[in-house]
Image (spheres, helix red, strand yellow):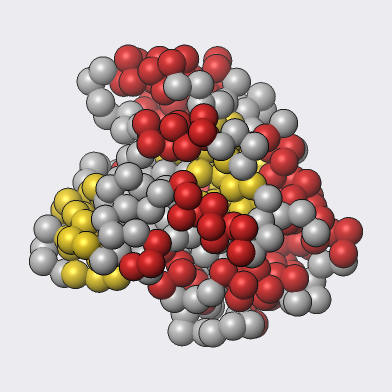
Length: 302
């Protein structure tokens, strides 16, 4: 079976900015917040202060992954130039999305560089109040003026819009506003990361939220779905139930496999993140081809 990992990251150097202030590399795959906490961001064998495209390709090759979509956010730090270089160097293996801070005074110049000069055809916004735009800005509303400006720009440029709206019960998790945006911009393809990031007791909430977002221009990646069910371990029975509900509501042709590597490799193996989906019993062999390859190929690579 051919595989696309629809949610992966490269980082020239950890340079994040989160709710705990700046996030800097300190070596050995570890990072330190401005508040002083130190943690293992990615396995040390993948890099010292960052993770190269070659390191990601090595993981992909060991696990039979054909292609990957390189996304960005505040956690590892914006990596637009580095991501563009990776795509240019390995065009048959990578595509990706740019990102930017819409509060920048020179935001129009930034957009022109990202989408004209660098040639990105997708844009990602991480909105979470832990490690996204709301971690260090006032609340940013999906139906507000600033985000409408981002969606207008995406429509004009023909960009796919990737949204990480954080976790339920936080100000960033704006399902009704997201549903309104999806309907207001039918020409724009929207991808919601992490299957909306349901936690271990959120089966009913996820079902209700997915029902609001069912639309022809909406897709979901399932990256970090297993991780969000902690302390559960492989084979992640709650994540499997979330997948089953998602299949029933949005269909298998709206779901895309992803892993959120490299950071999730601190907690589990790539094979487990892949195999729990394959062995879940939720999908037929034909449906697995959509989840693991066909849908991401259509959304990101075509």
